[in-house]
Length: 296
Image (cartoon, rainbow, N blue to C red; front, side):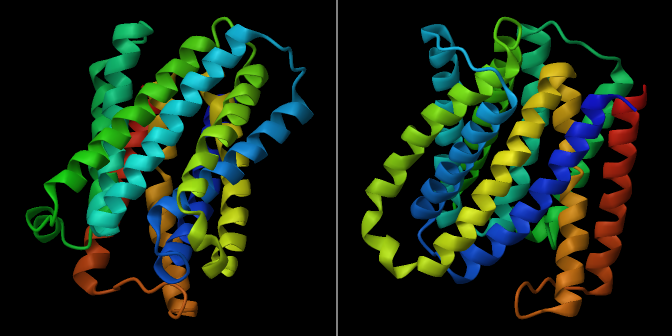
């Protein structure tokens, strides 16, 4: 198995744990989405900075700092749009839209990086996106037809767009900058930029001490996941790496279902027969799509 496939799969697994933890925190501990975004991004960026310092040989360069700042700015902006949308729309309708970043990445990597694939590979990517959306919605027709805020839907698409641009920029910069240096400067400037979100909502810090601890854990874990993900992008096709990470949607489904069975007071997901059938079909679509995209 190619190393980039292993790294992409590992990052998907780590992000599954992060999403489940964040779901619990945002549902029960921290209702302020901007504070949640600031805390998560800050702990994430701090962690990735430390990881880069430990594993890489860091060189000080203005060019490296500029590249890192561009990526960090896109990261913080994407998270800001994400949490802004969550405040206006139910997560069940909002989160699946982020899956379309694969389509943005496929288009941008073709235009700007010259990475092209067969029609079968693109079909596999599309199947994965559809499966990711299907597995994330309890009732697709009802959920998508009863969107409360078109503005929130626009924020979701905007967030997916910025995440896609970030990944394209990262892949582009790895052509001239050693990966750990790029990760270090991303983390350093990301810490500074994301701290502004905390400062904006600083009055709410004292009311969410337990939530802060959980978001700190989530952010640290996310930092490791992002470092692994960036290493996968550095050595593999960015479109396919992003497609593989969508397996986290089926892992989230299985994880949430298991927790619902064992500890419904923590996370409670509906387990009706119709919903389970729909999600199993979506699971087959994701597995098939990822397999087609990475094997053809």
